[in-house]
Length: 427
Picture 1: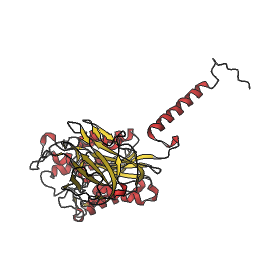
Picture 2: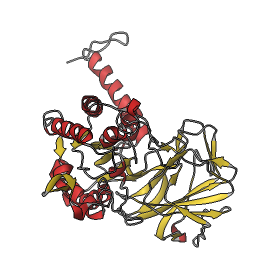
Picture 3: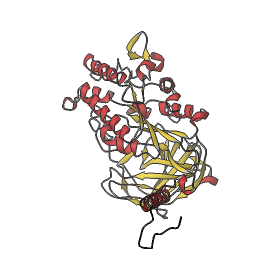
Picture 4: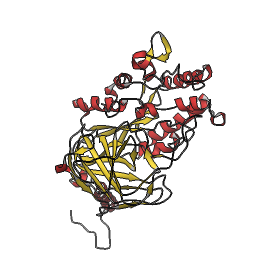
């Protein structure tokens, strides 16, 4: 049929044609911005390691616990070691000044394969650039990602991220409970293979995330919670937090190829009140939903809301208030199409009084009852309580899983927690 349309008359299917042009224009723009496979680039970014940022200078609300003493660095290098989950052939690293009161300048940031302790494989040492520059100044309350950089990184590998701090810089944004030896050396030792530390610590300074780019990326499982997720009292340098054990299980499962597991736990964190880390309902967006490639979230938090209220009555909360906070995070996850799992609160009988009492135990029981009854609203329930409680006294942790404080598991307890997670939930 002859087309009778003139140059001033749109063709019969003009609305559909315009819609298609707009659609493909949108796809092209999105691909250029994110590297989606629709542009012919099959690689995608996913988080492979995280450390939730917290305010170093915020006091801990327990009587008798020493308050933080001011710290700063000047003309020093800090070598952080971290175990990544997924591998890739490109990386980027995030540095954070969320809690600083002045801009933070890092004179350089390098990444390399760790060979144990403070040593690196110098042949892998790679300079990370920020908008093409080797140094970066992060404004107050901001975070900065490095440029994507070619770097061969197998899964389940230890890497070292070294930062150089040239001028006097007070410590504000940290992840305190690293459970990993962090080494500090004098001067600029960014690429030094034989890093000679002047001191060691167990906190991550300013470095809060590593993303990798690879062809297999399918999703990221974010473990979100307090010190139990953070791995308190697990063996230092052994990567035996429960998310570490889970990451190893996921990596060994062929059906879960392309998934990573990251840890966004903060020791002392609560659902409804700030303590060191921003309260969970306020940081959930940043630390879970904004995590690169997040597809699943495991929420295990609330025990500190229950226990700390006994020390600070003005911050005491009811079980119903904790439940409402958990529901808020569940709703946020669902709104972002992130599959959410709720973990039951572990037994804690025997923990120092008044953290544990009949009253606080009653709150734990009420929260757990709600979690177990909430199966219709979430993707699944992970019964950490059942996995770790003592059959002889279900209110306390099994002795072989107890780190000694009756609140935090030991390495075996963290492994039991990870083993309680059915991997079919992610398949």
